[in-house]
Amino acid sequence: MLSHFLPDDCTSGIILFVLVLMTNPVWAKDQPQLELPLNSEHVGEEAPSQEGIQERGNPLPTDKILVLLPDVTATIKQDWMDNFHLQYKAKIRVVNKGRLPMPAIQIQTLGMRYNPVSTPPNPEQCIPQNNCTLKDQRTIGPLAPGEAKKYHAGPKFMAAETVIIQVKIFCNPPNDCRESNVQNNQARKVLGPH
Image (tube, rainbow, N blue to C red):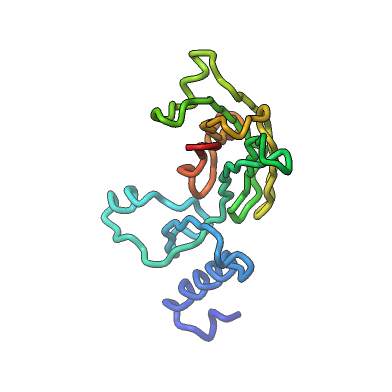
């Protein structure tokens, strides 16, 4: 065994080094990641919070271990429906940019027509006012790392119509996404002349 040839204080450093190597595969080098502090006393246990470590008076450990998580985002694009560019639809692309698969998620797409001279309205206001031009709710997934799904939402719009579109990502109950960045779970874009 390797520990017979090394001093006692080196063994925990080697174990930690091996753990970090195992959690950082070459194929996932450029993917989003979340880092949690880890030291030799916490191997095999749930990593403590930074507040918990500081409360005990221990300094924050310098060694870190990577936690792989999914990261789902959405983009909105104007997609022409004919060669003359007279009509368009909202094309939504949902992609998992993370390192792990994302279970099925709920996607809500809302849209409202408005006059481009005025300030764009908040699409979420169309639900209580019952004046949504576009209202689409669907389930997508699960999504593997790097996998993307595309779909058209709502009716066709005339080229002269301005529409504001909002896409919101909700995880299945309890709608608490376990992913590396929950801040990018909403996209908003104005389509048409503006």
